[in-house]
Image (tube, rainbow, N blue to C red; front, side, top):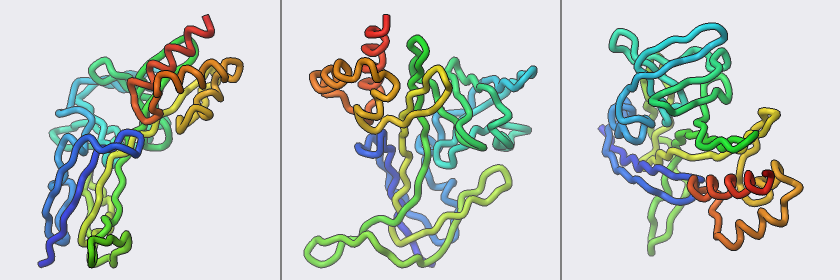
Length: 231
């Protein structure tokens, strides 16, 4: 039976790795059993929370699966996923607030200032890992040698397995304005779309304070600055 190496990174803003884990697995194994809990889940354990829908509130043990991009809950000690997140208004887990983004994914509210919110979307990704060749060169292409999957709530999430597989949890940051529209933050230009009247001040502040647009604390600092400009 062939063995594969799985490299796992937690990457805020797609740029810098904070956590790393190397897992050896055999072809055909369930990857969710190999990937560390702190890579898969936002919380270290399923935690008391509330799911709010129009006119209803449901309470239970909740957690957010970052690898699959799903809000999950425990039912009779079985892990289940919310069927359709668009039916949900908001989820509160341990006083942390989550909003639906699409049919399954959620964003977390990081900061609210006035009419604007900073939110983050966390999403797992699986890709081939570059192989080292002669003289230390690398190649980003590898032939698929077998298939495996992540099993969750009685559903199979298929993953292509290469001889080396890179599993990442990517962070995507957004500004949400009064109209509820999501604007993904990639650079200062995308940030100033929510504050066009203060573009020059925002650009100067970002430059002078070395604002990193893939860093949560820096983005909070910048949003607080923008809020001050509007007061």
